[in-house]
Amino acid sequence: HMMRKADVSFEELYNCYKVRFERFAISYIQDRSVAEDIVTDSFVYWWEHRDRVGSKDENPAAYILATIRHKCLNHLRALQVRLRSHNEIRESQSRIVQENIRSLELCDPVIFLLERLRLSFGKVWKNYRN
Picture 1 (cartoon, helix red, strand yellow):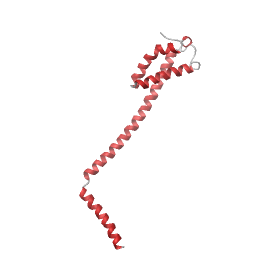
Picture 2 (cartoon, one colour; picture 1 turned 90 degrees about the horizontal axis):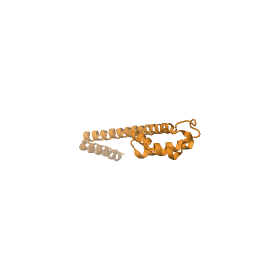
Picture 3 (cartoon, helix red, strand yellow; picture 1 turned 120 degrees about the vertical axis):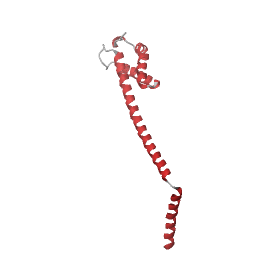
Picture 4 (cartoon, one colour; picture 1 turned 180 degrees about the horizontal axis):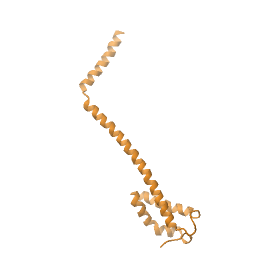
C-alpha cells in the first residue's frame, strides 16, 4: 500500500520499503554494501528534507526511489570513469611491456657489448690523445 507523507513515520517507511529498495539498488550496483548505503542515505535524505520536498500529499516512497535511482546513476558513472582510467593505464603498461619484449627479442647481446666497448674505448682514446 502507498504511504502518504502526512501520515508516515521514518520507521514505518523504512521497514516497509527498505528490502525492496535494496534489491532494486543491488540489481544495478552489484555491490551489496554500496547499495545498502545508497538506500539508507536516500531514506535519511528524504527524512531530513521532508518539509522541503514536495507537497503534503507526495508519495515519500516514490521520492526516495527516485533519489536511489539518481545515486545509483552517479555511482555507476563514477565507476565507469575509474574503469576507463584503469583500462587506459593497463593498455599503456601493456604497450611498454610489449615494446620491451620486442626490443629484447631484437637485441643481440654480443653487438650490444661491442657497441658499449667501442664507446668506452672512444672515450679512453680521446682522453689519451688530450
